[in-house]
Length: 348
Picture (cartoon, rainbow, N blue to C red):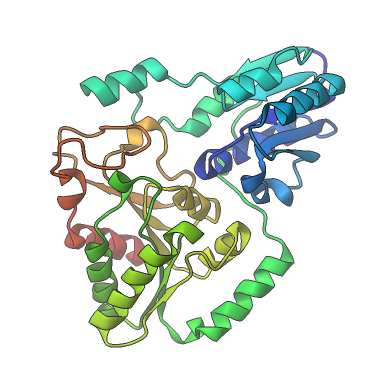
């Protein structure tokens, strides 16, 4: 195969899936140091690659309107990429790569049949440690690109670092022995550990040591996270928790995660953002399971789950409500089990 001069990677969304592509981009750049490597992404996630030195340019998809998709398809065709790597494999990505005139097109295999067998029938044909990152690398193994196993990464500009430095000073983080980050929300209800248990966890950790709890989340989760913050402070009788949900952009959130000694998180996009910052973490999995490929990657972590609940996983992405109406996959995860894992990781 001739050395490619132009490579296009397609991964439009979502937060975690995009972050999980970062090892592929890094290793492609290492393999083809002089190539033009472009990345096609939805505009709401473009910050994840805006400052990545391994990318030549970002191509943003700003909407799903047919006219924009048509123009974007023509732009891709005119560029005449040597390789198009579709790590999304959706209807839109298929349309955009169609008639691209690329010399090689490689498309991720999503393991849909295995996923159906696991979710619908409880038959697990996935490997114990298989990650979505491994599937991404399978897509490009033909080109001799090998995973360097350095994990996920995200690049933060100085501006975001200065903003978070000021914020850390404002909330006096330096006066605390430990700083914990909590990610109590998730896009889907069945991926959220019970909010009152996050409150109890926060109270327990701040009672054990002089600790601060930083609460992370998106703008749409601000009120949910604020309730948890206020309840932790009320239980503790002091301002030991700070709600940052909706107050920071993605890069500022990543920079603020750096101030945390450990993260306690649901299975969410911010879990992967924390992994990209190499943070120790305790990840709580309810209706989803790590076999689906979305366990924390490349960082020291522990997964807490109710393994005895036989109806899980009931989905590969989460649901708006428990289909069995009991929600035991989260209710059976105790505060004590999470505290135990936090202590174990902190002792290391």
